[in-house]
Image: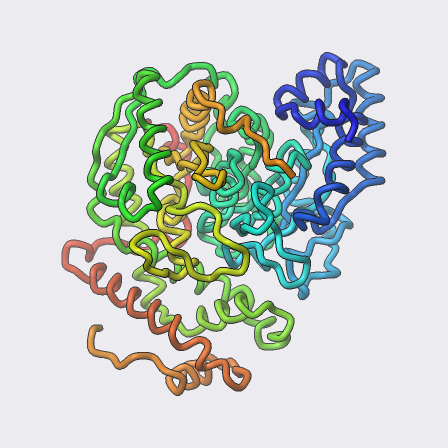
Length: 473
Length: 73
């Protein structure tokens, strides 16, 4: 990698966009550097399933011509981005990380992709993922095991593991992930980047291959909170093609980034959010809370009476809905699934309708308890997950007392809460463990109040440097 | 809700037949432990949600997003 490329890849998305606008940097330079980086890291990380080298270069030249002619395509003019491979791009293979859709070429863009194009983004490729997004390891039997750039023997989490690894490895300036039970936030935390799961209904799911309809959301993953806010501004809003999207006005997510944390009230649920954690995770999140206090925020202890039970509800819903979507394929092509996804889909067929509906009733209960709590607080803080990256292939995890636990249940200890309640949540890097593996905290906000999460996350990043660290690949 | 026997391979086979799902040989034993654990937790949640104080709760299958929801803050 040339010195020039290294400098370009070190820029945040916000800074790269600023330099494109001032014509200090050209889209061609950004795309060229990114494609070179992908070529260098992808054999090690398997972060990308498809790379659009020639197409991206052509678009970059067009973007450069437009910039030279004085045309501003938007806030993402000339910025190389990646999409998780369950997001449709017209005429380009969209596999969802599966063999079943290995040759599927959609006839139209997903709405998030179309909006990013309108904002000037250039797609450099599609990222690897857990097969059909049903799992948290991104250990994909069809397109390779995604590896963590901080330690290639560790997992990148998932299901948007390729997006997380690509962003952390500086192999794109940002990526779009899809989050059902934690699939944006988990790989963001494990790879040391920012990533937001929006309020359910804030971003269109049109053109995205579903996992669980009632919980799927699309959101940005990027190096900084500011970068996420910029991308989020481009994709948020009502979509007539997705009836679950809200008509509520879209906020200005960028202008509030400099407001700081002074006066913000942070909710904590001590008996749940700070129990059952690996010690470095506990310390990092507690230190982060101290930072918020030093920035002028106030901690408020809150009791969410019925928070216990959320993991079961999450697993029940996240099993039953995919098994419904996959019902036909599971009967016609069972051997085309990886072993773990096949098992989960089979199990989902055997849960009772009453289990599913009681879980959905529980969502109403949990959501109301959080909405009540938001009278006292502006957002909640908790760890994003209770442990740091495990070794690739492990299906059990040790959190405390040497006790092995099922990975799938353990990994959703905290991310299931926003998924069930439909609340927005932002992962922000907040530390490293003794092995140099990233730790993330999760900020959970009111419905449609992503702006406060971005504000708080940016304030924290203004006072910390965890997001500035780079993996040594 | 609390007195069922553990889910084992024969019960998985029966459930699969009921669902019209032809399991490959040996898969019953693979699925049984996880299904048993998940159903036990689901039963505990069902018990909680069957308590009188929750009788009025409706399932939240899809959240609605009227404009005033965002404006209530």
